[in-house]
Image 1 (spheres, rainbow, N blue to C red):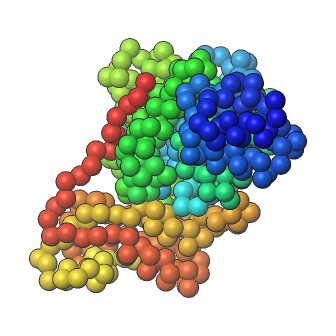
Image 2 (tube, helix red, strand yellow; image 1 turned 90 degrees about the horizontal axis):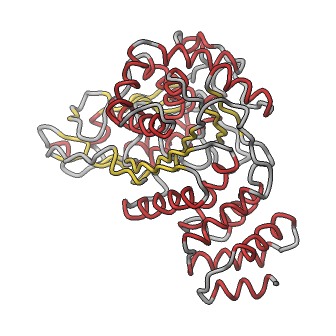
Length: 446
């Protein structure tokens, strides 16, 4: 077996066996296979694809390339949740406390944001004192005690994925369904959960721009889970506008707290309830979706979920009082209000309309607006400003009057704030007629 022959075999469209895929992954991770040969292999996969068994074998080889988290010390069925990334997506901060308050343990390894999407670890580090670095022993102990823990991914969790992703990023092979699916699922399998619920985003603010591509990715990951012996559910959700009213790290933590206090934005809560319901069912704690929905609603209404969020934050060294008193959070020093008249100036004839509606959003541009303010990273080494971001006052389908506030931008630099304003107002398109709204949850694949 040699690298040259395996590259040629995949280039010519043949399926690789389990040992052949393991040879490529192990060799590259150990440094025996150089970047230029693995680049050729990734390009061959990009053009020829992989069948379900190949993709699963690639996933398992990547998961086995480093440590696997042993969660057997945690009582009950452990259910993990993963999002493919979006703008304003803070569902993990809502769902985790809900699940823990209902007796379902959630042991979650999360990452940082890169590009126009935010990362859960960055958001949590906006809470004064919060520690995202936990030893495996403390991580498991906290889940058993509190029911919920979130920590940064360890350096040796699926190290093959880290090396392969870095190479894909510079060889134009990121947007390959088998490579995306194996990257996500290798980390989920290595993280040790018994069941996995996937939130696959689609739309202008997602990596999967079309419903067809989102469906392909969701189906591929569910099939990997099935072949790997893990109960896996994928929920395809809309990302054609930000999820919720806040974009930005500290602002999103505050919104998550409001959701658990019964003040959640409807689209955000619909996605969160749907994902949480499938997690409850996967854990065997609900008879059906209706039963799950009732339990989730009661967890929020009774305040148990919010109390669990405070307990979780305190357990990891954070100032839990921030969740009730937002003045305890650090704040941006500058703000800029975006009004309806600013949007109409960007569109021909819009100023003559009697009324206007938000009908379309370039959601990736909204994410980039937050990045321009300093709230995101262009590279993994970039420093971010946890205080900046966007508060939305209007959503798609809403009627807009000239003097009404559409959003407020928060920053700490005048030049960045001006550039962010320009990008934000260009991200929306108006219509004289109220648009037909897309569903928030498209479909579920099990």
